[in-house]
Length: 134
Image (tube, rainbow, N blue to C red):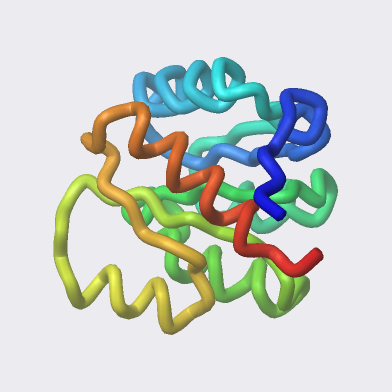
């Protein structure tokens, strides 16, 4: 049976946004909210991301790869040490296959370029939630 995610289902899913670029955070915040999800919180560096993740316990984290203080892959590794079930989608401005593979090996569900069309970003978020076990 094909079950479509309802607006209520989406609103019950929280997304944590981590990026050092305020414009990217604003853009992704709008995308998340317009797609019907709840914004759990946001921050601009990896160290804060690790601390806030534990407090927020989001359903999904959108995590920038390149940030000051602690990069996204390091933050991902620390988050996954505290929560093996953490769902993280890495955001990158480049298509560097080594970085993407490193992030996937560290436990990222997906890696997406920040310049993807907005509908593809939303589809990526939907796909991460739709592949979870019932």
